[in-house]
Length: 270
Ligand SMILES: Cc1cc2nc3c(=O)[nH]c(=O)nc-3n(C[C@H](O)[C@H](O)[C@H](O)COP(=O)(O)OP(=O)(O)OC[C@H]3O[C@@H](n4cnc5c(N)ncnc54)[C@H](O)[C@@H]3O)c2cc1C
Image 1 (spheres, rainbow, N blue to C red):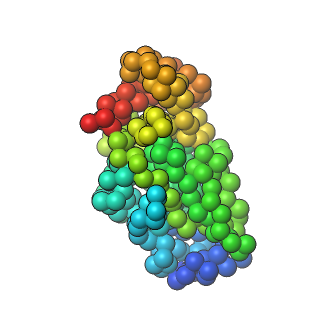
Image 2: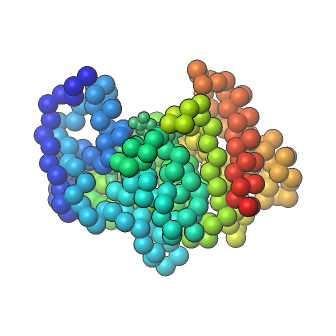
């Protein structure tokens, strides 16, 4: 289906992009979620502002205890980045499993978080390491923890006139991994789990278990409390509320969380 008529502009700076969203334009990043939604008429923005010309939004660098990742950095670049691989392997791994090579070459880390798909891989991986985003609007910048950014199905706490400029990943998550269960290589996760073993213990987060990514608190509490890995895996589904659908029953998905959390933990341990 052909999208409805819209106005297209291409920003060349963050300020230009913010001025456009303030005037009502929708940010366009890699277009891998927004364009399919427009074709299906699930979204019909009157104007879009393409962030693809904003050089400041692309790239990865160290900033103290964190890795700063530009919002327009593609999944492919995130997957291959040596800094992210060294300090936050779970995020690189999640990016490497998104869709196909073509989708990874266009889709972006900022777009994945702003889109807030309940089966997205990046939100769960970034939640597992306790990451955050920098959002900028006409009033300035603010930091939003990932757990506070995604509020429900395809919904975030971003204001209409804010864009994500950076994703911030804390260092110290070298021992981390992402495990994904899907039917075919390019499919979205039915369930995916990221695990990070850091100085403060184990953190785990899952996608596909509700309307937003969730911490796997049953698994975390069991392992951090001294339980065995099998006991922790058995407790992993506690408190999670996935829906029953064509991909499987809620009970099956809770079981998958345990299987994947255990798999990711073993891989994170090396
Ligand atoms: C066939 C297919 C398979 C896929 N498989 C997977 C998968 O396995 N796992 C997975 O996680 N994802 C998957 N995706 C989605 C892919 O990861 C997209 O890249 C992602 O969901 C959106 O990123 P984007 O850069 O393309 O954003 P866009 O589609 O351009 O934008 C998505 C939304 O975010 C908003 N937005 C974008 N950037 C910003 C910003 N900087 N600030 C504020 N708002 C912004 C847009 O306005 C829009 O509402 C798949 C997509 C396709 C088409």
